[in-house]
Image 1 (cartoon, rainbow, N blue to C red):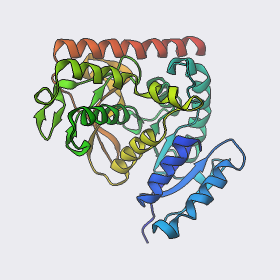
Image 2: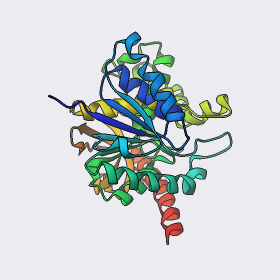
Image 3: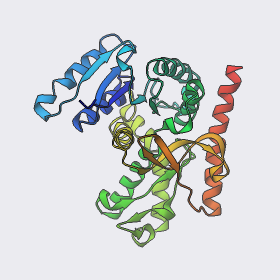
Image 4: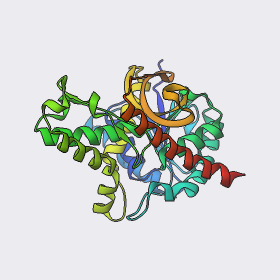
Length: 313
């Protein structure tokens, strides 16, 4: 009898619980929700499980305050950590969330030593660094979710401005998950046609800026929380690529080992995702402006990591 894949989600807040919802609805895997808050993961899991007869999905969904039920997970999604509040940068969260991600990763590795980790906690690139360092996993098994989300925001704004379906917009964002991200407009197209055939350079630059501030725009509206529908859907696109061995080429935060001239850092680039996790970094020919943008973004990530390393010593 075939074993259904298992995905554990650490952190049963809005992003984690909504990711569980997408996974169950798509029947991708059995889901385990883990959270330190007593009753929250159990209640949300039971509620989601009871949607099965209505929506017609047959997967197990369980909630726990312990890590035991996560044993032998195929994929573990780490969303645990404090969310951003208005006026707070992703970097403000750095040390607090580094401690949380450290503890989570230790527990995850204990119960699922062969799992693939998808890190969603902010500041994303630095938290992926923490998870890799603590786990000791090879680079293919620790991936950060940011590029899919930033690219989704970019494509949403392009479709809106051009008056076309989002299904026909193809674009992606490189770099760290923050103000220095690099939407690669030169590679963006609508139904294969270059973006500049549809929009003026001025409009494209406005979209680039809005993309960079896509997260904080939502934080400012919500006042007491941050985005979760698009972040969770973006996470599940990565989970699906891995669980189904789809070989999707998606923008992800990956550990670079010389690609694009960057080493020993998590930076957002295009990568192929399949059953073994991050299977290949796709290297594009970047022009000088794009290279400079990516270097600046990598330097920003490096600064965060050096702060972490300094506080650890």
